[in-house]
Image (cartoon, rainbow, N blue to C red; front, top):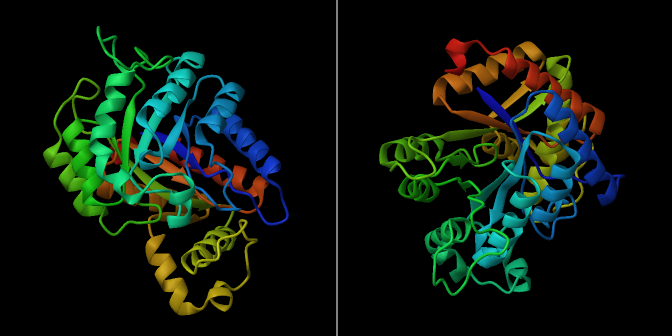
Length: 333
């Protein structure tokens, strides 16, 4: 069972963007030693608590600070960009770091309408998502004689594409193109069961992949005790509640009473959105992750977790790695 990390390069309250980037490099270097397979960064815009907006730049920085682990985007929000520009960026990364770069593609804008206007893209850009994927496959493919536009760098690098999604649409696109599929179950699990079934049923083999490959995303808040893990989780509960209310900010400190901070009704909605999570001591996290793996039989698990204190975040991912590496083969099959 492969296990990976999804990082948003969080900027905690009381810290700076520069420190957040240094923290991500530190986490990636530790993660490589802990056996993580991939380290992905996600594109978000206009959010003071997330420092991964220039995703390809940060991928290059972290790839340069690591040696063997795959580094990539989970993902690039393709409607924000011209496919040629993305092909050139990731073709450059693949040339600098051969065999280590992944390109996960999402259809969401990674921000609100104001962000879309600032990016000089409109809602209609998402309508060409399948065509843009096909263009990327051509740009990363072998040389085509007579092609008017080619990606330099990019051509011949065969950067592996992934489709990201939280709905049946992404599952259908991934199945149609024969690409690996990463479901955003860590914050939008409502369609998880249906999307997994659709993807596996409709999958068409491709030059990149001969069988379905599913990545399941899960939050992890691991600590020495269940109480400590639950305390760490309050940071993400609070951040998610603020985001939903239109007040995103830096990653908040954990609180002693999450119901007092956001209200019990809000917490129930937040907890439902974040229900694909493992929270608590090593034994509890092991049991919860084993249950998810047994239920969905993913080919890979990608773990995330917005934790305010960097040392606690390192410890959480270290525990998660120990749990995943020791998972019995009968569970991880």
